[in-house]
Amino acid sequence: MLVLLGISAWLFPRIPAGRWVLGLVCLLVVGFMTYGPHVLMVGTVPMDFGTRKAASSATRFIDCMGYVGASGFIPANCSDAVQKVDELAK
Image 1 (cartoon, rainbow, N blue to C red):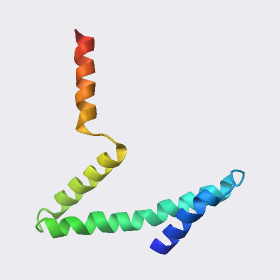
Image 2 (image 1 turned 90 degrees about the horizontal axis):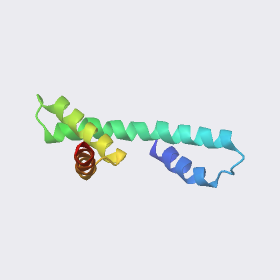
Image 3 (image 1 turned 180 degrees about the vertical axis):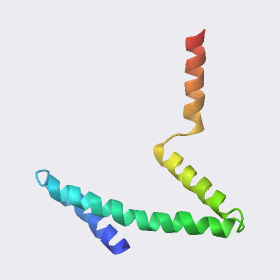
Image 4 (image 1 turned 30 degrees about the vertical axis):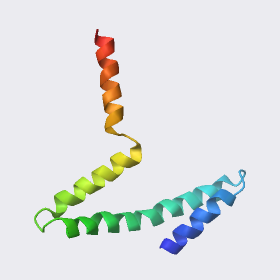
């Protein structure tokens, strides 16, 4: 799975701009091959950190923090937004 992911990630930037179907297929393979390792990490790592009872909660928390981090949403963005809303309210 990771070998195909590496090959697809290496191949994608080398696809000519006019071959959009090949680029689309390559992105499809990258997305599909990335999902497997993601689920393995998110599903097994929390079981090491949490107890049996808290494994599902730890899994959801770690998964949520991964998506929040990947989106670029950080608390600094929140504080800037709150300041702007406060300024507009005055």
